[in-house]
Picture 1: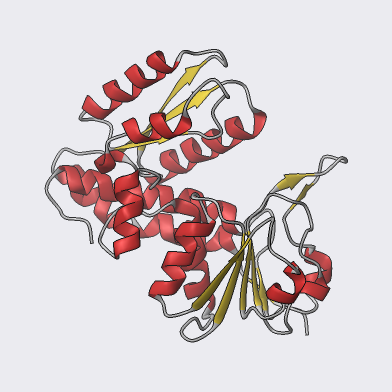
Picture 2: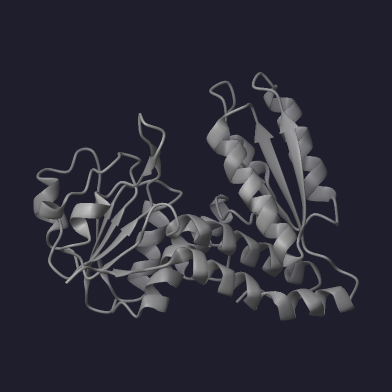
Length: 287
């Protein structure tokens, strides 16, 4: 039997709609959640991501602004922009679109964002809070994956979860979130011996490496939930995930599509974090 499709696009619309009451409550106090994006260079994918985030903001009632810089911008100029946004009371969330050009120290730029405005959840303070199980901003993609799993009714407690990819943006924070739900978690990477043998043990398999169709049907346990975080443009211009969708959907129990799976949820959770940051600015604690 083909896998059940986990529709991220429809769930993302629901998540954005859930923010309506909070946004109206903030409006009653004269506050409109504001998100500022910092975009460096002309990377087409980055421009698409920022445009999608701005569109979602406008649809939800969140004010958005984009600060664009040329590819050769100096690090000091970028840090000055971040400092201005940190001090701007109209801006509740700041996202620095990655990747940044090589001449810039991405870690230093991300560290300059105020933790209270770090709606991407990349600041060490927020990642540390996640590690300790304390309230903070969780990166959008891992948070979105967890909402997808919850919405689909995928059992987590006591199950084997395998994440292919160890980035600080997806793999590591997602592992912590799955551990909080009592899953047993394995993280795989480029040095993992016999990757297929490990992935076949997974009840929940997450692919997040940016390698088109890396995960084939022979790497998936029958009935497993397969979450595809990757998005890759093929030579013919079409998009593909890290999972061979056509083959794996005949083996898996649940599967997310690309596009229309994790991507829309990443944007939706960014909106959620921005609204939470606006609430934090008027004294409501993070939970």
